[in-house]
Length: 257
Ligand SMILES: [Zn+2]
Image (cartoon, rainbow, N blue to C red; front, side, top):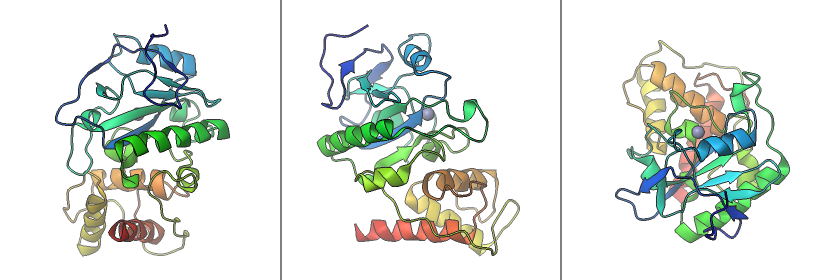
């Protein structure tokens, strides 16, 4: 049902009110954006779910495949999309962020090959985030994937999401992924200073990862999340040379900023 209120973003065509929101705690304005795919067979099902009080989930914005943008929750309210997660030590990411649900069935259909995101939809995400980031002065490196903040349980918006296209559109933080090449890979069971070095870099970038020196399951999950976002050519949770080089380039880009 259409609410009478006007969307906060000029990019959103309508406001369809979800009842699922609360007060932001400790943040009076968002300083991050978290991107999701809806992960359901159709957009209509996802929209109904996000507006159902029984679901206790929501997002601020919802982007259809054809580029139409709907607002569900006011930007000054805390929408319920992030769940348990951490980024840069912050755990209440719902309070810290704007949540954007992008219609795509994701990994729920054909397990390892989610369908591509149509250009019109990607263009709409770029337009929306350009507006949101400018109004709230959100830094490029704080445009995140749900999988970045919850690598142990989330894969969205997935390795098919075109972060490189967002970057060309002026959105997000990016470094050209280093080419895949043969060579040593760190993987489950490895230990020692090289593992510690990778964990240190990932934690410095923002991932919630303990620096233990042991390539444990959390390390594999965070490396896979990193690959999904920044080096999607191979998402296997193993820290190969290309993954580490791409991570280094991203960190170097932050230092320059
Ligand atoms: Zn999500």
